[in-house]
Length: 315
Image (cartoon, rainbow, N blue to C red):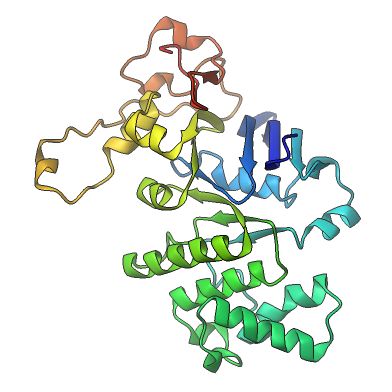
């Protein structure tokens, strides 16, 4: 494992039983994330993004493969070892309200991970809560408030506060702004970037919104039905997308410009292949405008130069 990489994933798979068959939620993911950077994971709903994030954190077990966090394999950790890793690996959920105990005050919600993962006394924990609230821009007037008294934007700040309260090294952000108004989204994204700079955080940012990924990510991974179909640096993906699925996603991003009237959106047609016991070959085959018989054979990610990889027979 490269010293610069905080996490390394090797052929990670997560299958769920569906009757006598298997749903391939994550199927053979392999990638690394450098310390202090952001990996954006994008794709349609149901492509396996959220499942991937939970397996990386050890919240659900992997079917096979390895997740090496600072050299320690998360997939083979005992429950005790996972508890010890919790302070280093955190998550920010999509819906902040459902992730908070409605009976706890905001201060109690932020204090909970501190209580579980540190040996600070009562006054030190209170001081830490105040410090964290100031870091995430939460007015102290909400110290004794309850979740139902806060708007979604401030609730998401509470979720972020909980995640950073124990000084983690890696945070999985699972659609953290998708339920927020656009103006609030920008505030939360800027907060995440500020915290990353101040604390040296590493993010795995899961979203279906490519414009958000472009704002925040260093590297982008595009998923389709459990598989990574393309991965590269942010500018590589946005200026030189190679996989037909990536091209279709990018063409659908709305850009406020007069010239946009002339832009052609590549609509994705055809039937979606089932992720339950999928056949060999490219899973985008049934919807791809460039599909050939060669696409029915198994296609792995191929290096096309400059850390840019794509799973397509055209390259």
